[in-house]
Length: 342
Ligand code: NAD
Ligand code: UFG
Image (spheres, helix red, strand yellow):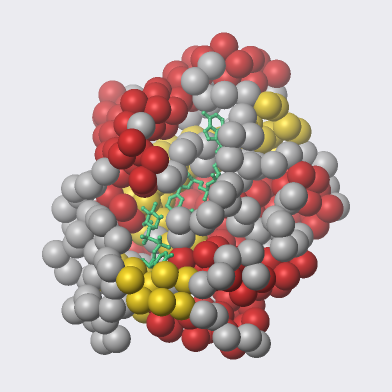
């Protein structure tokens, strides 16, 4: 396939975990990147790392998606061709405690973004959705046509945004909208310069294991070993963040083919249990990971993994890296940067 012409891409949330990796891929492809982020869950040092590993510059605007005027200003200042929209809050527990914060930040923020896009005739958007919109699935692997039923405010904010974008496309079919439902993004850039740097104790399995391995946390709590899975622990579809980042370039290329509203799962299609993840990380770090089995975590489901055939068929994208590589890169990042971006 011929390479796309260089674009100017606005990357909201571009200082965060997935946004930095996507910015690396865009810069490597020759695109110009404008990051828009309020740094509420990220460090500006991540953007220096993006520039180091690509040897390319990027533009950074510190701003909040809830501030409509600052978004309008970005579109006035830069000739944006397309938007990758990562900006948002993502902590499930916090969303249950502070639902209005999540609806304001995620839903109102997206409303401001698409309003600014419409006002500037920028109609190409890739949106970061989540497998959380499937809730507890009736069957696995999960296809894009499975029923959606989020079980918390975070998930509902994603569903509301999906619905808003669907309505937008119905009203104005010139839009090119790609909704990507990520499964469990993990790993780090192979350079060891970029990776996940959660604020406080991590909620997610892989960053938690990594912090146990580096000695920041004493042991992992395995949330339940009585699920109806092979070893009783929860099964998830972990996908390398660099593979995921490349999925966004594939989505942009797909949108080049014409106006549409499209939904794709991004995962590997392979489920791994918590115990398998622990073992893979022990191999990568060459040290034991202490753990204790505790009660199930509220709201967790037994198994969740993607049917990835639609992404392969339509985007020509599939994940290339396995769990061993995800753990290797996560450990490389964590061991080089024990305190993340510091
Ligand atoms: P992240 O927290 O590392 O990155 C999100 C970025 O958005 C942060 O840099 C944060 O500062 C910024 N941000 C948040 N609210 C903002 C606002 N109002 N204005 C401007 N910037 C704002 O998270 P991530 O893991 O990189 O996730 C990126 C996107 O992917 C999010 O929308 C998330 O919901 C979605 N997603 C993530 C996962 C996951 O497990 N990491 C899974 C599915 C979907
Ligand atoms: N787990 C533990 N101990 C921990 C953390 C997690 O045993 O300390 C287990 C969980 O019970 C689950 C598995 O590890 O079985 C994965 O848990 P994560 O928290 O890493 O991921 P989830 O699948 O629960 O949720 C993640 C994001 C959600 C997103 C969902 C689908 O946190 O926001 O993936 O994309 F919606």
